[in-house]
Amino acid sequence: MQAFQDYYPENLAHCYGCGRNNEHGHQIKTFWEGDETVTHFQPRPEHTAIPGFVYGGLLASLIDCHGTGTAAAAMYKAENRSMDSLPALRFVTGSLQVSYLKPTPLGPVLEIRGKVKEIKGRKVVVEATVYADGVATARGEVIALQMPDTFVAS
Image (cartoon, rainbow, N blue to C red; front, top):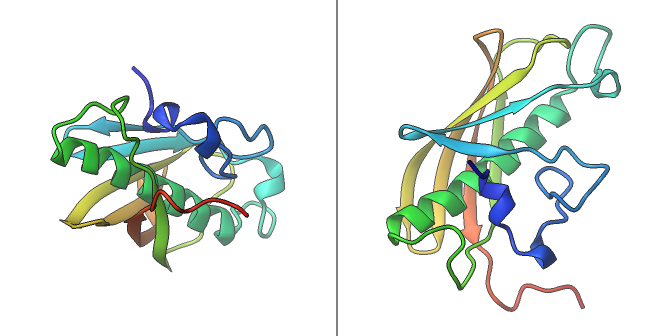
């Protein structure tokens, strides 16, 4: 089974969090699991905030990229299209809100679970929760906006 991010067009697969073409990035992979989406990520020692705990910025980036990937998959699903159909749907972050519920231990594989809260026009709202050993440690909301065709570097 291919991850949502595997369908991103070559020219849009460089994101630090989810781009398969960024060898230094997280390269997260997100999948449907029922009505939720799921990503697993193994933090490395360089993701330390203080010894034994994960840096909060990493958690925010995981929620961010999990949210935009979920938004794309949800929009394809809403349009009854396969993720390899054209034109490609790609989303960027319009807003990211993160609440840190408790310290996230460094060591266990993190699980990020997402739920689509709303699809309205070119906007998708996704709630994502980070779990370490089954315990929720961070929760966020991503307002993802469909990237316009004119969104290119100059």
